[in-house]
Length: 454
Image (cartoon, rainbow, N blue to C red; front, side, top):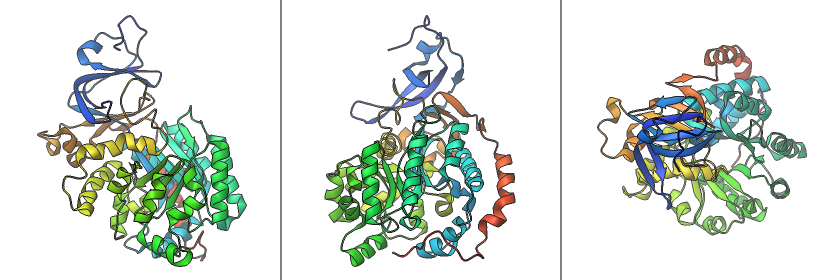
């Protein structure tokens, strides 16, 4: 339905752009010389530029040469870990955790978390991310940053069994306290760390709490092959089988990484009682030299959505989901030995609708269509590295860069316009964080928050 000029003014009209759309079979397409009409934070219509010319609007963006995409979703990260970017380089996983990251994280204060989250949100807004799923500590601080900067987020307070029942209780209290906050932009999850740091009793209790309170669960699982092999050797079951026997797979669950998912796990994931999704962050797997990657094709075949992610910047060095999209396509081609898989359009599907479903927003985000939240990014394709355009999907996935994002919009509110951030003062956050870094990175105390032993 096209709004008429007699209607009250729209909040925002974006015109003269090309819009990425999905048909009723979820196939990717593009509508050229289009206009997007936004009212009350929702897409009211996708129409033509000509039809939108005379419509009244409080604000207009004329965007020739730009493509409007659903905002990207970072389906698994630890946003405050940007404060540790570059601190633990060129290390195997065990040394990365035990010698650097977990000792440093024993120093974390809520202020460190707040400043790291502020920088992370600025980085994501500039890279066209409109929503992120965060799994970390002192998450009240992250929730406040999300409320202030205008992003959308699925947030969970992480816990280990070594913290005792208090860790699980804090995770629940956080989830209930912040669910629906920031004008509904914040959703929450229970966040056990992983099957190798959270015991069966705590996992089963988490599953019960998730069912009682209608909360999803977000955790690491079968991150790599070593974790799966160690679990089999010690307990006779895979990490995914642990989740099945403790009831976690009967909840709506978001599994981080899953490069160690075994063939025997696939039937369990297929018949899981809740919505099951996997977040894939391929750059980190390459950096850690893990032998496998997320089995996207096998998961697709059993109906499990795979969303795109970056993990934290301490391992990935950036929060660039644009890069994750390109790497997912390339790594999957290599892993499958098939250049016909994963196509650019398939990669865009993972970046849009599948990522939205992974974080529980499948009915409200992930596409630009009437009734969907107005989470939109405008990408400039006039640069020399994106010209000429023979295949627009391929140009977006393999030629465009996060720096080509010109404008980022969440709930109809502009968070970045022409590469200028509107809601975050980056220099102030950098100055304050730099003052705190010596105390944050000190490892002379000999403590660590946990022991990695898989």
